[in-house]
Image (cartoon, rainbow, N blue to C red; front, side, top):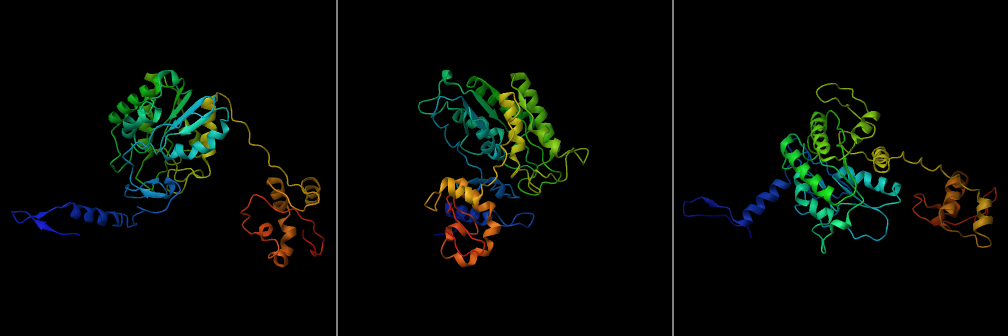
Length: 363
């Protein structure tokens, strides 16, 4: 029940119920730019939480929400004897981690459990993420083999948000974070903050001139700590060079980045390739060439003898490679073999087949 009461002076008393009502009302107000709130929107990543008010910019448990106050817990226990790699960072590292980790097949890799946000959050949570607050705690002799970490984008929000920091505060926190990680890792690499376009229209306001300033401050801190810097900033700028000049020295648009945003959907391989070299000291291996689809006759003879039924990628490749030939047969046989002819190809297994020119048989 919501009730407004007054104290002895006749002024309204702000009861908990009133505070809750005001908070809910503010949460659904449109932003200053005329856009509705994204708070509560279904999401799969922070890319889908472009809240111009810089409130619900985190995708947490499938919904756009404000930043979490907790650290999200410590690292997962090791399941192998492989070298251990930990990545700490915001949504950019959450984007490149699934691309980089399979490339580093010789490592057992994991990302910290949440979006690490600004350096102020890293200062509070780094001991948890590195395992010092785990039960039992990770001991000094249980050092990580490699730790990659970054803070930057959330610290330089401008116009200021609750996460914005001064260069001095950012540098002090980064130094403290770096010292904690150095004591618990055999190899530490700081990952530079990635560039942003001239006009960021998705999410909090950010300016590349601030990215340059914060990267320079981070480089100074890392030099004093003898921590190398992996320059993913330069890797992006090689693909999308400066076209705007001072003071931002950036681009209006970058083909690697989401329009008006700071993320790299579909192009995190550019960052992952650079990071692979920083970790291993070698160039990343070239991607494997695509495997040409087998002919249906060869497939049926090799994988589906006497059964007309096969499983796995090779059988699927056969269908994909001959989908044009199958087109005239779709309507007559859709009811008979819906799994094979499903237009969305949403399956792993498929049926092998034999087919005459007039499409009278389909096995």
